[in-house]
Image (cartoon, rainbow over all chains, first blue to last red; front, side, top):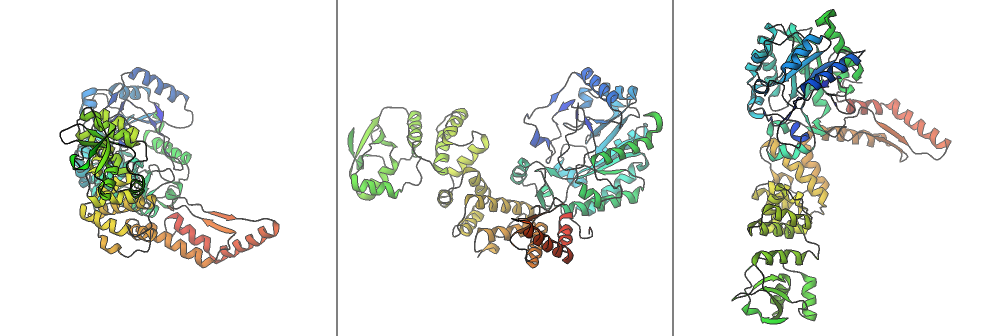
Amino acid sequence: MRTCPGTPKHVCCGYRTIDLIEGCPLSCSYCILRGYLNNPGITVRGNTGAIIEEIDRAIALEKTHLLRFGTGELSDSLALDRRLDVSRPIVRFFGERKGALLELKSKWASIDHLRSCLNPYTVVSFSVAPQKIINEEEKRTSPLVKRLEALRKAQDWGCFVGLHLDPVIIYEGFERDYADLIDHIALIVDLKKVIWVSMGLLRFVPQLMSRFIGERRHNLLWGELIRGEDGKFRYIKAERVKTYRMLWRLLREKEPGLFIYLCMERAGVWEQVGDTGVGTSEELTALFDRRIEEFYGGSL
Amino acid sequence: METIELGKVNVHDQTFCVSYPLEDELLFASVAQFGILMPLGLLRRESPVIVTGFKRLEAAKRLGIEEIPCVFLDISERQALLTAIVDNLARPLNTIEKARGAEKMLMGGFSTEEVYGVMKLLGLPPRERALGTAVAAACAEEAVKAFIVKHRLPLSVAEQLLWFDPGERALLMGLIDPLNASVGSVRELLQLLMLLKVKQGSISLHELDGAADMEALRLRVKGQTHPILSALEGRLRAMLAASALPPHISVRVDPAFEKESIDIVIRARNNREVKEALGKVEGLFRQGLFGSIFELTHGAPDRN
């Protein structure tokens, strides 16, 4: 278990990651794991008991904030879970502990095997993208409609759900496709029961640039990319601000109470997007605390 | 050491030839003055094959020398190829020569690990991708090989050049060749052009004709790959030029316009110079220079 490394000079949400699995079979073209993990294989940790003890200690030690944990940082939370069944003990632990939230973040719409153990302290989240991007850059993942149906199913089972528009990719005509995506989300998912929505525009480590050029990743390279202060490639700030504003507006039009946050963005971008007034990581973490309080009241 | 008539040597067999190009004016002048002092290494055959000394042979042919000193090597073809490569390690090899060494080993049935071992000696990264590029460079069109050698391009930049179609390569080399291009400038230009091609699906290199220098060429391409950044840079240049900053005051802006903050740097030797500079900065502030720059660094015109 570790604190999400975030990225220097950017606002971070204080997420904790649980590395049950390292590596991912979904092989999305833009995946940051292609730049970070040297091992092409997939590593599964068998010491779930020790990991749970570590999480328990972290929850006990944290006196200020409501901790959020996720297993989808170095892998997809659900892609291998039906076969490996590694999430169940962790999901059960969070349900019994009732002191923090676990987020299962995925692009693989397979949650039926967890139905018996899912509880309100597990947030089922899906990363979503226009079907064009799923077809071309996320070829091994579930289609959009399956992801949205899985989210709805989780809501019907009593779970809160999360949405991650991440990475948002700027390609020719992306504005229309993302507007359609948000329409599609609102048709299937009950937005009042969405605990959070993250937005993060495409960013990647420098070593992936030559790979994207070599693979002629037209979608990924269509927007105007610059090297950020953290060394990663990301869209130029003016484009990021414009795109975030557009998505923020579209989402809020569907549900004015939605809690939206930007993943790994600069304070200067936060200032210009939305209405939260976030300028520091601490302020963002506090917003999360309030949001969780709204949803869980005194049960957390 | 023996001598052999040039006519008896199989001068067309390039199996062991790593050297590129074979013409070497310094060596030619030396052979013209002193003759061939170092014997060529020949593989003993009915018609002996050259293992070492291809450049000396070339000079001898140009000078009409009919008999050359030689040493016959009673070794296998594998040993002969290694001998040819190691013999050349005594001098700095260009990228094509290194590539040829790796390519010949691969084609000669050496294992990948053996090739990687020699690649390390040659100063090439012992990796599959580098080996692939080396093979492609060794087998490239003559003009490409000559261009790589002329501009002293390392394998990584050769890889960029080879990424383009043959027609595009020819046009690119035509654009760059007349300009005084450093390795870094070629690398940067090719990177931008690769990006442009992926973005647009194709590139029109004819539109880039007539650039005065590499920087002008780079800016033209960057204007297409990074139109927003190029426009911001242009606006900043214009603002700074209009503000007529004295040499002891500079305004530094993050090159990617990511950082919202700017650095205003004053160089002063005494209180009087500080006072003068602060007065100038205040004047610029009143003129709105810094507010205009902040509009650029904040990424939205409605920020200030």
